[in-house]
Image 1 (cartoon, rainbow, N blue to C red):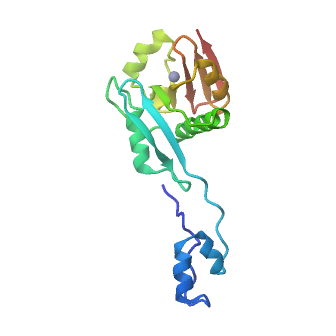
Image 2: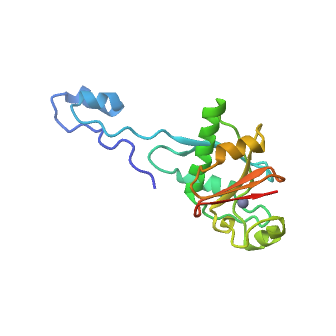
Image 3: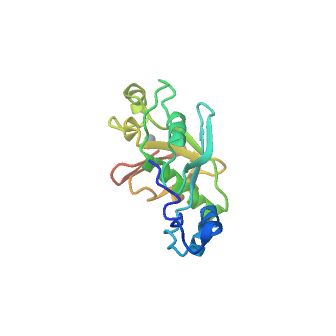
Length: 196
Ligand SMILES: [Zn+2]
């Protein structure tokens, strides 16, 4: 659902500001002050993600939340990018996962001065795909099955930096896979684990 970004910006009719004032008002936020009406609370900044699926090579480099709400079309693209590529099956991913990935990118931005590409090793998994990965450390009742988890690495950065910058980021599940050199993040209850 998208909220109304311009709520409260329209001038009341037949004000002293007149027709020109109304046009100016519709042109932008600053003009709303000239209209003599209260400006709305500042909109949130848009949120964007840079993702690459390491199996399919598909990428996403776009705004997924416009500051007022999640952009439906972008959500569909992200659901596809995060699909189970073995089964070619996609689900609606938990949008809170997008925000966790966004927050991680923001931490890299603050620490390293730029937004890196996040490599997606695994997003949604069908029960069949997940069962095949149990011997590699996947949980039987994994949050990947519910579209609430992603395994990621970060382009150009090692596992130690990723471990540091991703710690506590989602207040959900957080697991480090040292050998696989990726981190698991999910929107489930808070917990953490290490795998060699
Ligand atoms: Zn995982």
